[in-house]
Length: 414
Image (cartoon, rainbow, N blue to C red; front, side):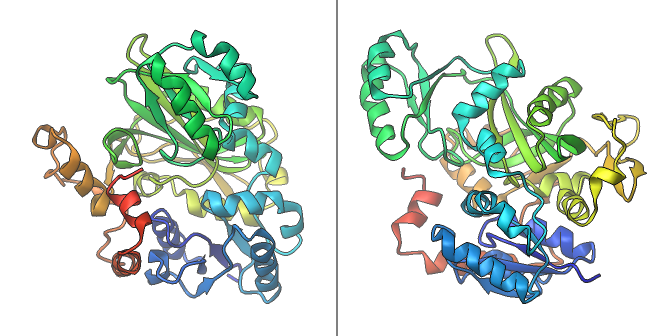
């Protein structure tokens, strides 16, 4: 096997399960990041570490990728986070002359990345959404702000995680909050606040030019910050209707590569409503891998195959056969259509995510499942076969110990 993958954003927690899955499949992996102490660098499956220019210096970053691809440092590129996906999709046509990059073009990427475009796409596909207001100018906001119902959520059109989110309980707070967020995230959305009590689901896919190759679904059990943030404990679940609903969004825009569609159930009408499309690898990627859907390896297979000629033209969405714990549907060409996974399977982000959830949750001793119940669970990072990333995580933490960003990230100052 001569194909070698560069996995970017090695500092990100989600890089570790991706690196491990590829390495255990016998696929050569090299890792890249702009920062020195990155947990992915310390995985035993990372054959070489590269420090590339900060992706925010876009021209330098793209030039670095091309230069190293020309030197055969890698032949396939997996950009796994927003800071690399955005420049890579913008320069995709150029990059594909030197390497294989299994991602969508930039205009399609922005349909998922820009929440205002996502909402418009959802309306066209008849996918339920919370009541949403979006104003293209400040004049439009001031003209109609008194029509907005509270409580509501102000959401940046383009951001990741919980950055920039603001809940507004009283109408008197709305204008000040909107203008404050607008300074950093221009023209944010305003959405109806969904009350507590509804579950949050993620439906994940791998698609080949709009055709579903694999899918998975999970439910959030805990998150940090407790008020809303990345999941710290989640489990695999199965809901064929929600899988079909989510697939409509991605097949309609001919998505290519991996993506997650997130829904939250509105307890007032019990309808799952679209929260966002995550147009890249998601933070809980470890769960589908251990439950039977190896998205990184499947994406690698997609990258090296001419799938348009291998997949049957009329291939449609396959749903799990619940009588079989794990099953792959018959291969179309050399790439199998993954049609089932194990559920319920749980996976936890213990260090530091679930620990911080426990510390900051006033109901910490009434959690269901209990914080102290580890039976049958997997972990995003802790793996007896590959403990190096934990060492890398602590080195990274120590290197930032006296910076303000580390307190914002882990202690919750925003």
